[in-house]
Image 1 (cartoon, rainbow, N blue to C red):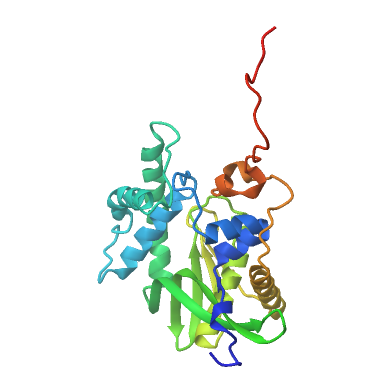
Image 2: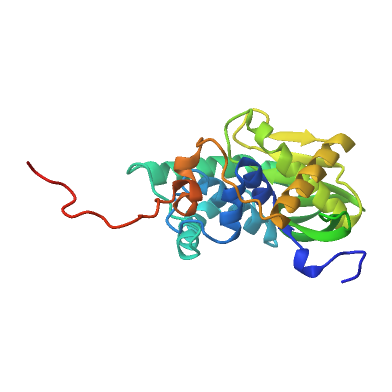
Length: 284
């Protein structure tokens, strides 16, 4: 590598998930980056969204999309996704009660039935790329101020191009919470920057597709200030990685459900010191 791009051993891969986790807890992000997530963590809460994502990707990859064919895919894909998660050690779906699985299937069908006409309007008329994986180079300052290349990485649910160099980035959520969009603007902003790194242009719009909500499509346009704030967060994350700042957060909110709690320094059992007296308990 040249002085213009820094040293290869300093390169950092930044995904939106890792960036968000780092902002929540430095140690959580570091432990997950090291692959220390529990293989038996419960993924039930976000599993339906995963199933819907897979259905959309495979449907858009087909040569033809007859009416009603999107929802019809869920009966095959749900058990496949459950098996894949278990075999890849991503986690285990722990169904909450006997009818939970059938209710999830029905909710997925409802979501996909509502999603199909949205995709016919937003994606099928033009060029599109579902589940678009990316690894985009970004130059930021290293600790000493010298330029250093890092990588923005991830997967966009859907990228559409309705005219040459006129892109739209879409994220699909299965939520029925009409206010959930407040939690995903950062993710869309991350994709906004990644597209600029890849294509040299920002998307015309970023959009949230939420078929289960009263307003099924939400559009976002980001300002230069929004983009500066996102870039500052990326720089801060990389600096902490370079400085090996892996401190756990001060509070314990969300810790009982954390996928890496078993490896966290905050919850590690204290090492025994000295000899343990015997018997441990005396009876008078």
